[in-house]
Amino acid sequence: MIVLDATIIAIALPAAQLELGFGDAEKQWAVSAYAITFGALLLIGGRIVERVGIRLAFGVAAVGFALASVLGGFAGSFVVLILARVLQGLFAALLGPANLSMVASTFVEPRVRARAFAVFGSTAGAGAALGLVLGGVLTEYFGWRWCLFVNVMFALVCLLNIASAPARAESAAKRRPTDFLGLALGSSALFFFIFGVSEVATRGWDDFLVIGCLGLTGLALLLFAWRLARARDPIFPPSLLAQGLRRTAYLAVALVGFSQMASSLYLSYFMQGTLEMSALQTGLALVPLVIGLVVAAVISMRVLVLRIGPRYTIALGLAFQAGAFAILSMLVPTWGYVPWILLGVTLLGWGIGLMMAPAVSTATEGVPAENSGVASSLTNTAQQVGGAIGVAAATTFAVTRFEALLAHPDSRVSEGEWSAWAQSYAYGNGFAVLAALYAVTALLVMLSAAVHQRRAALPAAMQTHFPPSTMNDGAQQ
Image (cartoon, rainbow, N blue to C red; front, side):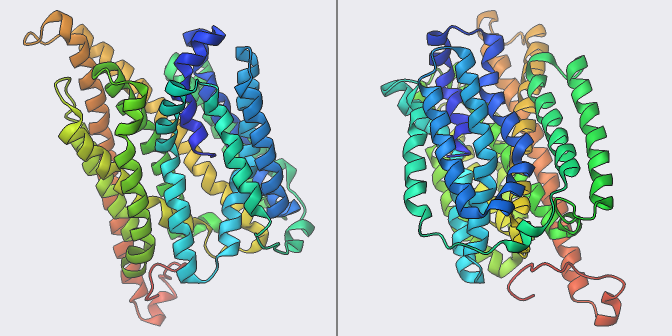
């Protein structure tokens, strides 16, 4: 429900814009208002989960998210719709950490935990693609408002099952004082960053507001790092980010968010704008991505992580995505859906599935109960930040590249057709950049895994100087 709501509104926007009468310059806020509020308040949400307990936080957040969705579904003006999206983001910032903390604290036995995170990872990863599918179906057959009303059903299922969740004792977290200055600095950094990159698509990277937000982001991050080092009770122990495997996990989660949003944006515009597919057809065309993602997530946790460790599994997922982007970089208007788009979408789903479950599991593994909420919120934050960067970078690159190509038409293509070709080339160039980025990152993660294995194999005396990571990186260690 949380991830789905980041994309489902994108399919509903044209119909909502027609009915509520808002302009093109305003429509991005239907997406950005949710992402900015969600991302900026995640650290606070994680701390609230630790203070009040997982079950209470989860129940309140699910009810609040459902009520906010109802408000948006009945919105009679653009202002009410944006207010509803802000409230959805607020309750998502509480629901996300509570949700992940519940899974991490309920399933502690390694083999059961692996199965649980396979389900969790595949569901979280599939949410963005399912948003496009469900958004197309609901908008075409029931109306755009049902893209918001549908959350009531999800929330009811959550509430019906919450009673069976074990009530975990969290007295240590409740006694620990809250570092309000640290929370304010961390949340401010997230707000300025996500707001800044959200504005890039319409203002450009050289706009004063964008530059100012990114500058304030850097300042807030420096002060936040200073506060983490100096505070008696920081909002999370710096050791969470000191472990190499956990840093790799957070990077992987961010890259999942990045690839999901960037690829969904390019594919949606190409299939609807160039190939003239309907919203429903576009959503259905992404079903292979969802299927591949779910299957790969299960295989990653039940087989690959146990045999080759999370680092190599994440690297394999990055390599699959690099291959998918390489195929999609050859987009041309004469393509049909079969075979190349289908192959690219399927490989992309496998790549995301191989990464998401082990990354989320590793990011929350071995975290003390008093820090589970904030550790979970950091995982959600990584995905939100990755998605925000993906939207901003992909949109800006495609627009800039399209304008450059449009100004220099190819003599082999007629003037009337060049716009479609230029658009396809722009998306293809964007996919090429993504292919290079993910291939290089896969190589770096594999090198990191190899270095870790060599250190783990060193004699005990040498490990004093070159200690391996304290986190589990495979069944043998």
